Image 1 (cartoon, rainbow, N blue to C red):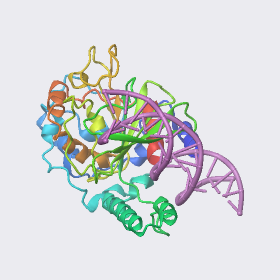
Image 2 (image 1 turned 60 degrees about the horizontal axis):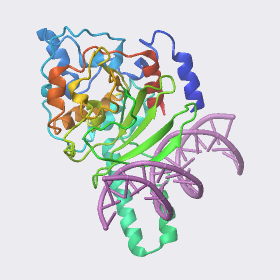
Image 3 (image 1 turned 180 degrees about the vertical axis):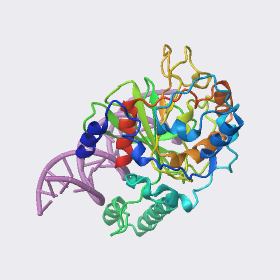
Image 4 (image 1 turned 60 degrees about the vertical axis):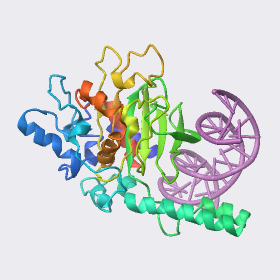
Length: 331
DNA sequence: CGTGTTTGACCGGCGC
DNA sequence: GCGCCGGTCAAACACG
């Protein structure tokens, strides 16, 4: 880990265009789904910004002059949230992403792991061997099998609050101090039964105003309607899936140029006086497809959100962001 | 009382 | 083998 950090720092040169993330990003994105789409639009001249470009392939500064489709989500004509297809791992293991080992696990397998763990718990509880049970619960993984991780999806948000409301309900199950960071990392789990999606939230040590959120897993349910009826911030809604995988990539959902709060943030803005910018960065394109799909379950957010702002415009991938994300995907 | 948070302990992975 | 560190568990606690 330390080494990773050091490496990252070394790599974190002023120009990150081809350094930190690019090595994890397939040079030729073969992602099915949404990732192809923008390109098509590009041909039509109505959507200049390819999604892949947005993903931080390069430092991409997109202007708001682009006539973006009403909503990126609208562009995504994909089926509802479903467990990721087995193809996930294949995509994730794209040769061009040698370093994305953590994502190399098939989301499907990972999901199965979850089930197995749960099943194990039930069985053991019934046995009543509490002592033994506890220990086994703590290590439900099979021997000789590396822990399988669900595809992860990280993004950064410039916010004063760590935990943004994304429409899903999360339960915090842990918090740890992170090495090389003065800020603790919080661990959240989706409270929906049978949904094993987790997310980690931590602040960037480089820029305390930036919150790095990493989602892991796939929501197996639609985005619940929150009491507030808000789905705050789109990226946080990441319910991904892992359906499509790919190496790590990153991008920042812009808003940095907003002079006022974007509509989709109104209900969840942490503090009143944020002239915010929800700077969001994303890694793991693998999670994107479903991520966007899920958004479609959130009635109040995606549409208005993207209709008002083509979120993917004005992509900015600051170096520090890339650095962090790369680190994220390196482990 | 139900739900969510806090927090110390524990475990596994990994590097040395 | 050992120690560090990230991740998770679960009891205790807080809150509405």
